[in-house]
Length: 622
Image (tube, rainbow, N blue to C red; front, side):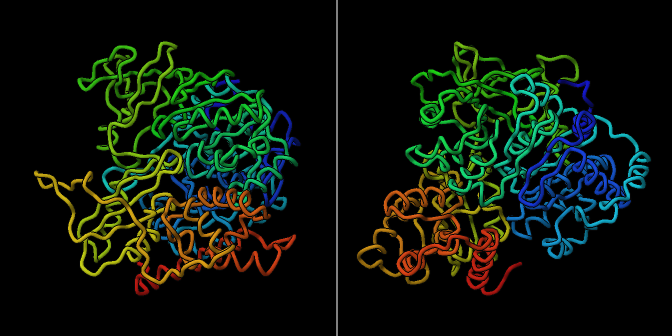
């Protein structure tokens, strides 16, 4: 496999379609599509987008839950010549609107359920499958498709927003030729026709590997819902019914699925290849995987969004050495790496320096920001004329084996739940609250459980108000788990905030929490406190309001099941987000054999959470 398949992503998928249009391409919660059906539905979307003026380098928002329809929308945008901008439906509406505006989106591909919300952004809306062309007018749409100009390899294929150190997210613009270059290196490590599972969100480039590795090699892409992806029992049940050959996901996500002791690892692993990326891979997790599945190939991949998904890979040996970390690996095909010191000169092997990347894998740059692009993508003195290199900010050292080993960051950037987060961007959002004077944000917690703590000053402002303000403007992983209100920020002698002097984070509760009663309530409360790293929790504290995340909820469930020896589902926890509610549920009723759709339960919880936020903010949801 290689460049002869096509110079764009959709051309490579079309090549697989021509080989066998009846082969299954996508298995989603909403539909199972053959390659032929996927192409026809995507062409219908492309025709409608083209009629709206979408063409080469025009970003199009993709606001669709994880489903076959999401893949149809993505492929339709590419076939029209546009660049897809994936948007997680869990994002606050204000964040979605801001990203669409920042990208200059020409249209929005969405679902009927989200159409009303999407319409508020003033963009034309296209709903996959909501057209007569979908039902059989294929001759007409095929003719219109042929009238569209060809999409060059230099065209944008997607735009992804990453956290920005200046206080605003940055739109990384990636071209088809950069992504196909990544795929050409990946093809050397995988087999054609494998089935892949999309478990992580598609709004991060980590998830795209599963999509394009499957569809450009003639394999089947299994799209798991958000609920299936975070409930280890539902995840294992799906894998038992639909064997999957390969998947790529964040180590902390896998660790939560496998359980604290790794007991569930054997039920949540693919058959042939596991790729971990997005954050450091703990050797202990690899050993638990090996215990469950000694024959499984495990790889550690590394690459910032600006270098197109991944540019280093390491196949973990069967006998993992006793080491503190798993190496990042060696460059994929066509990638060149430079480990430079403060003087931007190469450092000797074994010496720590900053990792710089050179090669055809580098993204075009930051959309609409030529100055930021020029600052991040600088001329490479060691390369041919015109060569660029990207300074990752990651500190590495070269091992005797030739592999690169991660040694920390050269700045304040952190990884939370596998997402890149600039604390400065979060602090900037906190500072926009009308009652806040100064703000700062620091990470706390251990690897794989890292969370953010916000610190603010302001007379009369409360932690609940500030956190609610942030939750309505930031994705879940960027919302501080704890906000600390200070009378004044500690300062260094030169007048800057002294981050080392900021107090340890503690949860502020503005309402009576309620003390747990002896027995089951007390036992459950203790497990909650242990999971959240708190001294204690009250019976009326909502899990998500005191620092809980989806991954922590998975860990909470595993601990509850082990300690109480009871069947407890993720749906049950979403529906009973306090100790009091969960205790009452366990005491008064057994869980129904068939529960309502977990997505609806999540929606009810989200609605309730937003109501609490509005109350905390005095009704303000600007």
